[in-house]
Amino acid sequence: MSIRTALIPHKHVRFSDSIVGLSGYLRHLLVEPHTLDELWTQVDRDSSGWQSRPSFTHLVLAVDVLYAIGAVEFVGDGRIYSVQNT
Amino acid sequence: MTSLHEDFWYRTLFKLRLYEASGNAFQRLFSEVMQQALPGFQAVAPWGNWGDGGNDGWCPPENRYFQVYGPEATTEVNVVQAATKAVGDFAKLRKKWPGVERYHFVCNDRYCGMPAPIGSMLLDLAKQEKLLEATPFSSADLTARFISLKDSQKVAIVYGIPSELPDFIDPHAVSELLTGLADGDNTHPSLLDGVSPDFDAKIKLNGIKSPVSESLSYYFYQVADVDRFLNARDIGLAQKIAFEIKALYHDSKKVIPNSADAPNERYVWLIDRLIPTSLPRHPHSMKAYRQAAQVIIAKYFETCDAYEHPNSFNPA
Image 1: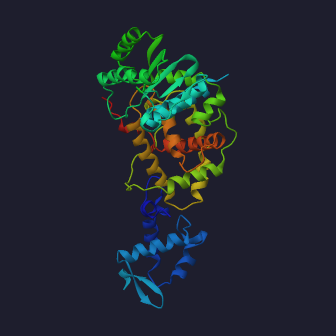
Image 2: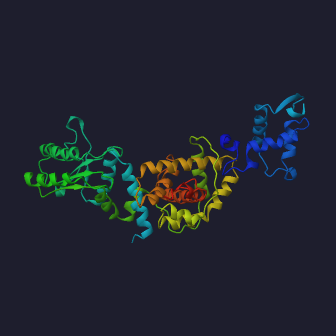
Image 3: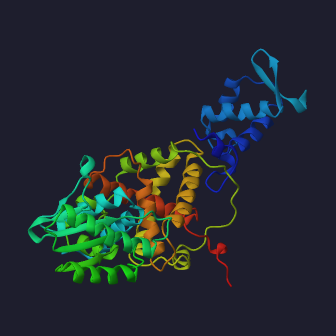
């Protein structure tokens, strides 16, 4: 996967397809603690409310971005939670 | 009979090969053409201390000898040095090949014209050595020999050329091309602004002429093949290829000097560079790959990754 070019929106990468874009959406979902599987269940459906249907790899990368910038943290039991809500 | 379309492809592909050929590569290209164009032509390989005796290729039935000189593209052809080398090499040639009656100094001048002193010195040489013929042989002369070949012989030198009106684009070739591009080195991304300008206006502003202008418009209708492929792959791939194409176009400006024909020549150069070098250079497969590559160029031409964005032109 071309992570560098998929990270931010470009001429050929829509905002909703970019990893940063998806990260923003996940952060909105993480108002309560979720496991990765729970997040995937919410995102991997047509009625998710997000404009694109990301792959699982894309989802994991978006979570990685949130963790790297300190926007989420582990709260135990395999769950992550948005820092602004702690 | 060769159509105008085929003539454009053969001429441009051969011209690009000449632009890039220097030293041994030019000598090999010269031999490839002459072996087909001049009956009885033989290439000469240096042998031990004997070397080649100043003979880079000859035609024994005519006692015709060629001295080949392929300077690097980045170095200016020094008139005095080139002429002196031509005459100096003749003495070496006659010593080892006494039967010489016709002599040609072949130089890859990259269509700039042979320096006048070379012709003059060779005329003097012909008188002095009582030769039947002694003339310079330029890139244009070699091109004329190449164009006079049969289509099957031209194909053997520049490989297959795209059909005028292909019925379909082989998606396998497209995927192979994109894989080759995607596996290459990446450049740093930068946010690009601007809206895609009108397709025809961009063709005009970039100075692209027939038949390339028609090809771009024609292949643009098949861009959906590329989009379908890209949509099925990971998200950053389209952007990554855009960077590759942009870098390739930038390189094309270094290889092909500005001229009225440069936009068309760069188009053909880009197509050839899109095809991964690891692929077998078979005429039939090259024909399919070149057609597929034209669809990719059409896509990225429309989005201004290849060629200049109209906003980049200075109105002054």
